[in-house]
Length: 150
Image (cartoon, rainbow, N blue to C red; front, side, top):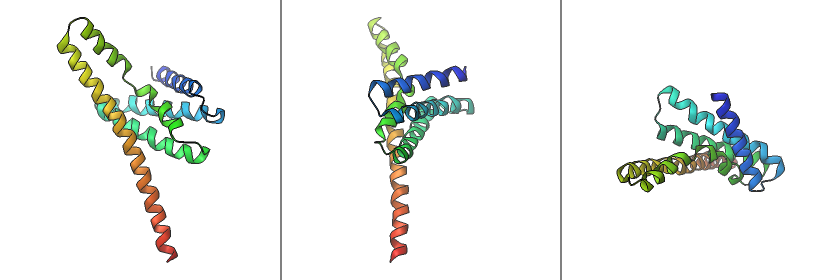
């Protein structure tokens, strides 16, 4: 099951890169970012983490990886971060929420919609957290170089 998920996350992230015309030399890296994000997302619940925590951590990993890949491949980090979070998007949860509303199950729909929004918030928070950690690290590294020159 894990191998199937890895393959599907690689294919979906790669397809997203192709769909949005990222540079050809970065397509595989974008697919790998999605695969690594999904691997973290699927491994953490096995260690006892809740879905929101595993989503937050995996989005942070994708964000950090995107920042590193953007430096090495000299392209914007959004090429990798957008493709990397595609396997994490709660599409089936949003679908089930809308289906509950259509079937007049308003309490179930509100519950599922709330869960969907919380997962989406965890993805956004994880992306911001990864960017912030990377920015602070780079700033501290450059600050150390500035003090050594004086």
